[in-house]
Length: 88
Image (tube, rainbow, N blue to C red; front, top):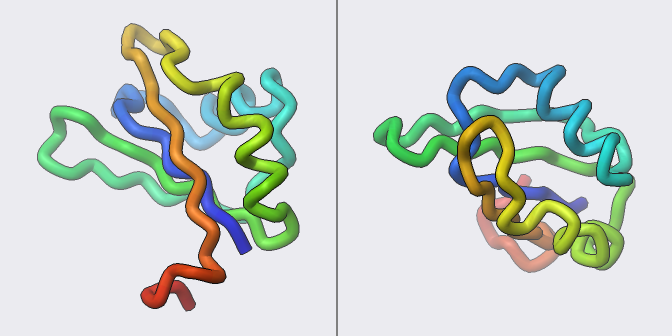
């Protein structure tokens, strides 16, 4: 199981907006989307992929890294949850 963390996402972006963005750049459909507002200055979303290996997401990561979307420059990280001791 792998996850994709997208930071600096506009807080008005809906789940559908995020899914459309990912599909446009060739990402597989995610299993879930969790919005992480933090202190509000740089909200993020965590997308969980049960069937996609981290390597596949890493190969797609450059497509979104530093992309200017909804008036913000987003940043993208891939988390391989095999190595995350806090992962379920």
